[in-house]
Length: 233
Image 1 (cartoon, rainbow, N blue to C red):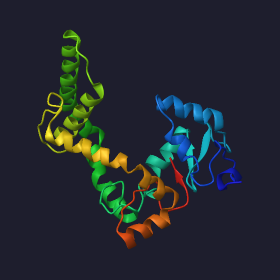
Image 2 (cartoon, helix red, strand yellow; image 1 turned 90 degrees about the horizontal axis):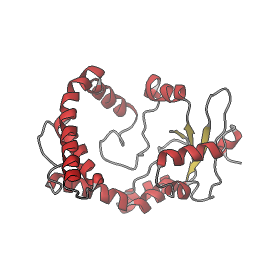
Image 3 (cartoon, rainbow, N blue to C red; image 1 turned 180 degrees about the vertical axis):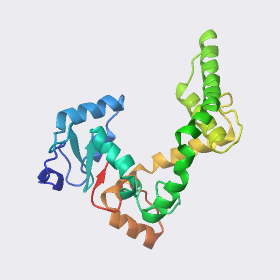
């Protein structure tokens, strides 16, 4: 019996070595409904919490998936300061919010939070609406000309343009220019990230060994789990 089972949490059958990683990797199509079905089938109500909770294992790391809005608010808003370490673990050496930990994370989070206040976001809404209008014009043009449209690539450009104008104050047009060099570089970054799935799986299952590999052999592996025993998502 696993640690979470002793606490009353239930979940899908798991592999001794991989946990539920293989099953989660096979979720495809409509992820929202896939997760809803997974929680409905294997989840359970724990204690006095409304809504089901689900027990999963990333390798040997126990994970609790909750559906209760009050618990999510408690973790993500009211007591976020107690949950400083994100899913990307200490294996990363970069200084992004996904990798920094503990007091450094608190400092950066508190510095960035005012930039995303409701008032600041309202100021950006006009800019974002203008960018989205370009997206709609492109879709309308393809409909009128009866041309196929790769909506996935179009949304790449939409996302980059929003980030460029709102966060970096740079004006580019990646929606109408899908071969823009910056957009191509972003695609390459995420392509390389996905291609390292074997390394990430290894780091997830054997975090301590992955740290040893990085320190001794100089090979960097990226995990999706924190340093501590349990994570709540």
